[in-house]
Image (cartoon, rainbow, N blue to C red):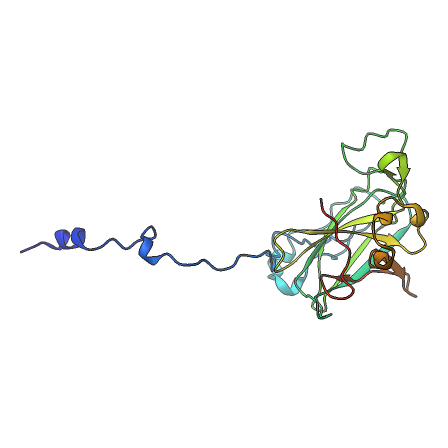
Length: 231
């Protein structure tokens, strides 16, 4: 006669390390996003205090109150709004993407230790970084400062632009691209823009709407796929 303890010891081991229960794990992709920790209230407004950035419909009210813009003052330069839709290969809006931007200030200097050009003024009130989610219609919006021109490779000068990163479901890595302005000084000689085939440059150039918004759609695939860069 065996005891209960002996019976348990003799039984095949069934725990999380037992190879007999192993199987293919689910596919793991980036997104949709945990809104409490990624987009934050005010994260898409680089010039004033507002709620641009996070979607209050995707987080509890008590969490939406925890964050906000942390501006030290009013940045110098022309205040602009940039916006656009994030679209899939079928042209359908993506409501759970996230966009990050990084840019120079109005004088053309980055708020980074890597930018050591003391002859270009540093705006202590402008960080140049923002993050925001798309809304239920796939639209992102940022309020920022129109950037100045920055140095490019080989002693060239780049046209004013905003670096853009796209995060979304099905994307294991961010998709880096750029936003230029249709009337931007130096677009025709920009060393990066000139790397792009002329027929596709329009996917990087924002157009100004009647209300003043600079609009650029981001197409993740399809006939009008946005030009993305390798880093």
